[in-house]
Length: 263
Image (cartoon, rainbow, N blue to C red; front, side, top):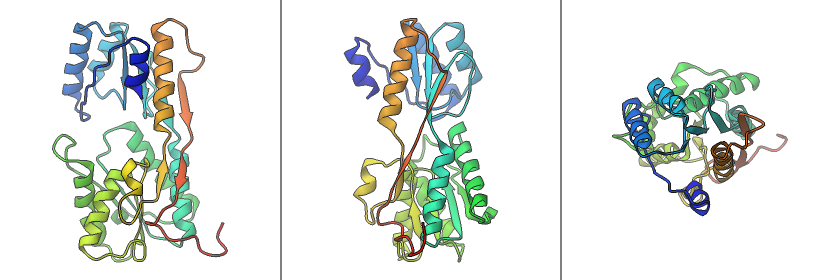
């Protein structure tokens, strides 16, 4: 979406994948500055303080997507993580789950940290206890392991707990790995353990069982981010520094039907 819109407006797009590595991020920023870029859209936080300083000091318009950080001189678009957590816990609670596990990739960004904190808060809202042995985080590095591999590894920890009846994964890809490990151990999904993801990845409706997930308006986020950036580049000004979008739930086969009498 970003490249398509910018190409239509006559701009060339450079793609830089940093894997949340601050040193690599700084190298990319230095290279972009050398090539006289006039704007940057980041798909997450600016990890390295030096990268932030380089962008600000060189007067490069910057928009951050999917971040909870508020950085002076930068603009952002994000999804309401509090609502994501509330929708997830509410749905699992209504299906009868009471011992819900939180499984996540490494908390390398403010978004992932916020999502986890919001999940803990939502559990309290529903009167559910969240113990340390219900929360599992991958230890691998992003540049060496995919999210699916991370989820597969973390699922081994979930299987060591006898009473977990549902899992909320920080992303759909992470959930795919968990489902793969559960299938190897003949775990009935959702009969024994329910699973929810987050993102509504294109494959989430194609796997077996199809994945219940939280849809984030990624395309809309990208469109708003590009519009912000173009306005900054053209000195048109912005009325607000940050925009927050609402997610929605998509219920599929990986969670149970809502119990009669539940709302």
